Amino acid sequence: MEGDEEFMKYRSPLVSRYASKEMAYNFSDKKKFTTWRKLWILLAKELGLPITDAQIQEMESHAEDIDFAMAAEEERKLRHDVMAHVHTFAHCCPSAAPIIHLGATSCYVGDNTDLIMLRDGFDILLPKLARAIDRLANFAEKYKDLPTLGFTHYQPAQLTTVGKRACLWLQDLAMDMRNLQRARDDLRFRGVKGTTGTQASFLQLFQGDHDKVEELDRKVTEMAGFKKAYLVTGQTYSRKVDVDSLSNLASLGSTVHKICTDIRLLANLKEIEEPFEKEQIGSSAMPYKRNPMRAERCCSLARHLVALLADPLQTASVQWLERTLDDSANRRISLPESFLTADIVLSTLQNITEGLVVYPKVIERHIRHELPFMATENIIMAMVKAGGNRQVVRFLSEEIRPLLEPFKSKMDVKIELEL
Image (cartoon, rainbow, N blue to C red; front, side, top):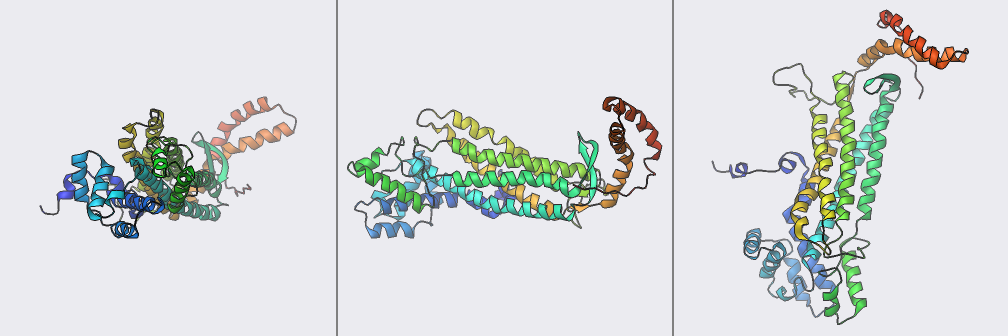
């Protein structure tokens, strides 16, 4: 049927189902290729060669109107994406055609655009992470005095509070905030480097004037919104930069996976639930179920986020000498997918933390059930203070435990906890 064409081919769920519009646009063809054109314009402006204002104005007037069909046809013929877009840009800028891409290599537009996308991707993620931290901090403050069973090895242990447990999650997220901010701030621009990173082509254009070459690099870097450029590159910027960026996103993924796994375990105990919509269906067969589907989605996507780190690690390790092209296809997938995945993970985590439901009576019942056994620790302390041997006393306390079993559901105690 007419209009069904888009459903006849695979669409990435990261875009069609999950990620936000701003993150999807950040890695879109529209942003990518308009950024290429803007970088060509910056280069033309700062070259200082006999380039006319009319040529610059012509390029600026066509920075956004990309003929994607023409570019695709050019790439089919040339088998080169950058040159395809050079030809497409030149077609609508005939007077500027001779100076588009002058002295540059493909990585001038390709790598510098990737760095812009990475920077802007972090700028989208950081506020979302901050909001998730804020919502969870509010939750921790609200329930800071509500005692609950602590668990080690997923076995009942000493008491903690619901708020204190949330602080474990918060501390990890705060570390992720630090890591993402640091990764964003550490990004530099590739700048205006030559085909092997030597700037030889620009040195030739400027007739051996080294100062002009360095000034060009500095000005274009500044105009692109970066404070610094990498001092040393091959044809590409070091792929260790991708490792640094994606390792911090993978670390965030591990944090969110742990938080949402904890929530899923607590949901099974009926102590805490994620938000559940009025018309939401928990199970198609069991209407009484309230599955923690948001937390499960976070765990599922966070696992993908962690797994994606293998790509840049391996890519960085096989970049022969000044570069090889076996990084390109991999990075087209791994870089956008990491940011798109982190984006939906953080949005979902915010949704969860804004609507967490706590059931104090269930928590209290679980405490009462285990309290007699936890009392044995106090018995040990009292007996040791009275002069007993800790190892012998511990053995005796194990003997006491069965005696407490009949009373564990009948003990009426006031629970007081100081942390």
